[in-house]
Amino acid sequence: MRYGPDMGADIRIEPMTPEDWPAVRTIYEQGIATGVATFETDVPSWEAWDAGHRPEHRLVARDGDGRVLGWVAVSSYSRRRVYAGVVEESVYVAAEARGRGVGRELLERLLADTEAAGIWTVQAGIQSGNASSLALHERVGFRRVGVRERIGRDREGTWCDVVLMERRSDAVD
Image (cartoon, rainbow, N blue to C red; front, side, top):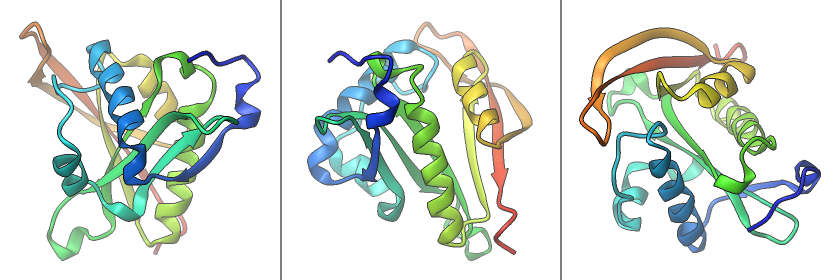
């Protein structure tokens, strides 16, 4: 896959479908390969991934040819009713599409959609070494609320910190 510098004009954000899973899986694998996108070492099966993510808030970014450039999805924070308006998001961008605004487009649409659905807090846990993801989240209105020190181990077994970020809705009361 090759993407040009003017790719941003061709990005379409659409609901994710089960047919998008092969591309979503590949992009997830690329994220795992960075060593800073997740502590996961393997992509789960479609069934496991599907069961862990809310179907109404799954999006993909497509180029003009319909290729999936990235994805974003949310998981419920808790089963408790008091936290019904709190979700945790994950966003991944294809290796060759990074740095072209795909992640920002996905997050901005997700935030609009979740806010319209009454979600009052979207949170993310980002490895402290993932500078690009931290910057992206700050650009779309997330704030750092804390650091979970030595919360997980990377592939080499080194303890890593995770920065907890959140975006609170001004529109949901």
